[in-house]
Image (cartoon, rainbow, N blue to C red; front, side):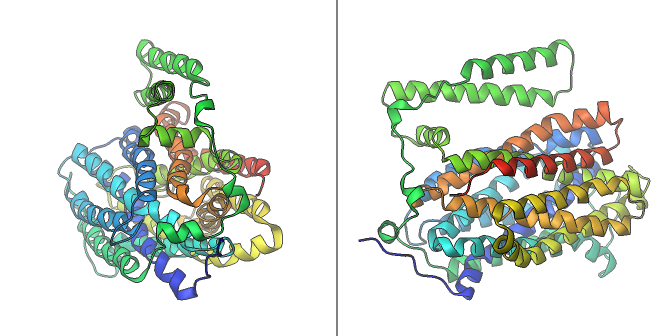
Length: 494
């Protein structure tokens, strides 16, 4: 006899999602200030994408591992909460150390550690919504996460500006040193992250594996099954290998940009993983995490495959924005690319306000999106919001007064809130509960892969095609949002 999961109260959902407030403090401080830190420590504009590679690469590795492990975890803190705790501890320490990095490569290493730690904490939060909420409340749960993401990022993104303008803490520093306004922002963010995640750990209970087994699942989710002996892991392996070799040879022979090595290496590594999975299948060595994650990847639900393209182009656009907004605004709107000048730092601080603004609009959008879904459906609502994001990014080229860029952030905010909620609401009802964590981790592949691609090609495009003008990377991001909206037409709801 199966049972329905009980509905949770507003405050139970609030407490369950509150930790995302802290996670977003760390995420927003990273997104809004790491490029600034890199440039301050001597990075050139075309070096920034490859330095940012730590963020998506760690997500690609960490999230499916944490998802797989948390699916199989049960202890005194439950299933997901142990990962909340240890991820929060490591992220807190990384936030304290990051702005004190003495050299560029130490800063790049700290970004790697910080992003890995954030991913350890963040991935189980997505799965927790699927674990604790019945299908009818999952959209509300993900919208609540979007609300906290928006609120947390509003404050965190604006912290350097507030430190400089409200508390008169210096936002300039000698060459090679990080301004105190940035340092104190990171310290404050570390404290907020630890307290917020701790609140969720202490205030939220989890269902045991036995309780979850008794709850009724969506019929489509129960039908997700596979015959392990029939998975064709080698599909496309020769093509992937050939393309990987061709890219690596071309980069070497024609002295192309080093970032392109990443694309070739990525395809090559995936081809090797395909071969390893195929060998494990034939030798019946399938009782291990690597094989199980690869098998789940090759047998993911149809809805997940369709959403993959939407996620790909959505996150390519976001990554272009996060990498190049500081460079675009400081150069195009403030007329300076020198981190030592006052104009550059004014522009960089204003980017923090812009990032705070789009997250603030996202928090407001979290209340409107459920209404849109009720009236228009998930597909049309997500398409509209992605279109608004495209208009927002493209308008940067045509707006001269940086104050008016706040209007652009309205569209970006609606797109951001939608990306953080609607695809997950569709996905959570299409996968089985005992694999909620690993499928949420695998879904992250389609967030990370476009980010890796962006890190590979954006620097080349800005330098070679756009003559070093970062503003055109934002235009490219807008076009990517439009493609994501079109891809949404292919998605079939369960």
